[in-house]
Length: 287
Image (cartoon, rainbow, N blue to C red):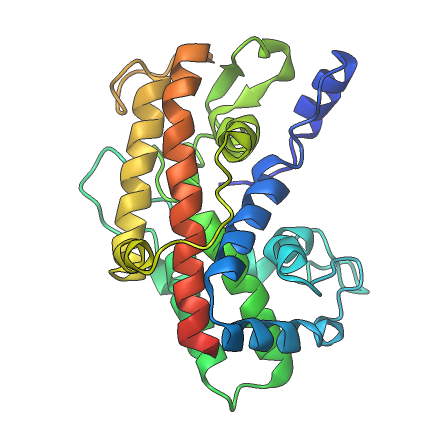
């Protein structure tokens, strides 16, 4: 599921004089998940996060800072285009770690989607293990922290958790409200303007949640959370395709205002879950 920064959409909206959604989920969503997490971890965990991120120079990615939890939340996307001196991708090995293509039109099954651990849920578990092991090399611990912060956000973007053999909706052209000329696809709608609207809808998602609520949302395993996000992807496809997630895909999906309004609470809940669950994992790994 290719993540991209909606360059074409941004240009079209800019010509219309509208605010660009380019920093919506790509930055806004990940940063919000990270901010929720930081508001809900223990003071000891906060101190550990600060100590690790203060060593960001070990990552050797000055183009992609990771000195704060907000910066770290988008580091894993920022590094994608970085090259070695001979022109090879520095981080190409991590490209498939951002998603898992679990078929929404078949029973939930992560096995084919996570072959050899090359999927987001497997990497979340791996990063927690690396962080918990104090024998892990300092550079690897800093990198694991940055990856973990980002990947928990990715897992809770529904179209990173399920698809219809269409790269998580990247192959499904879509209009968003009146913004047909922006040339969105279904994935970028959830990455971009829908996430932006969901996060900016009051009340703020960034706050300290009651202990009982944190315990309820944080219950279960990463696989359990994967299933929930997969369920949300089913909802996303169904809303876009007139009620049937496995129905025929038109040449262009039209996300009208009523459909968008129904999806805002789904996006908000996924982002809230992502932040609270990231807090749980950070406390487990560093607290």
